[in-house]
Image 1 (cartoon, one colour):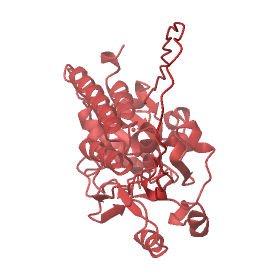
Image 2: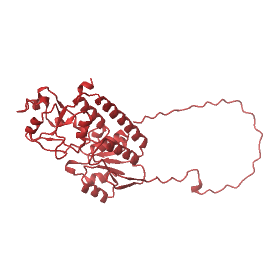
Image 3: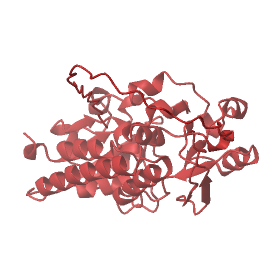
Image 4: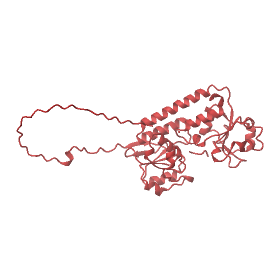
Length: 332
């Protein structure tokens, strides 16, 4: 599987009003009639009753109706992509815990971790943190979501199975609506659109379409995993001006043989498993790969997997990184 998982400033102005004082004239005594004091009930004093918060009712990406009594003040994230969206919307101070894999931004590392490995979570810890909203993701097991709901917690699912750039923008917009950060969500998505459009305009000037092999997982060097059609990385490759050599595979994440890579003869090799120990040098030394164009021309590159596997604000940075690896001549 693809490893899962893209700022407001306030100023306070103090105005000092200086009032000149003239000598006061001696006032003429005035006779004030005695008036009996009026008894005012406590509810009629200058303290108005507190208005009830307006409920927020939305439909999440799983088609579930989510009802929040008001703007959430305590949020738990169950996926790195959700964590990055929350912080991009300026909601970091409201995030009280994250999953074990949330490591960006740096502030997220210091937050309490509530599990996530193999889809297992510390439900007792989650309940103890008293969240107003738990943000799940498409990768969150359905039984975990049900368990959280059985515990009377409000859960919203963000991100869809078939990720696209538009679906990521929609996720950010939805989180903004749930958390009262609609304007900030609009600012974030607008900047993302501008960056993507600029990259696409640059790629449109390319004179070639390099053939790309994307190595997803080579834990078994003889049978690595790559990306096929129907997943976001395949879209990144094509939109960045490349051709996925396994773009016609029968499944989104096919396991292939090293012989198939040799036969495909890619011009560029991108290692998203570099984070997990695969090095450029080890790939250059693979037996039988010496005649692959990418190896002969040393067009083998590592990439930060978190930039391309998390459907959040940084996906734009991932797109830029992919475009620069496929078409370095355009980004000098």
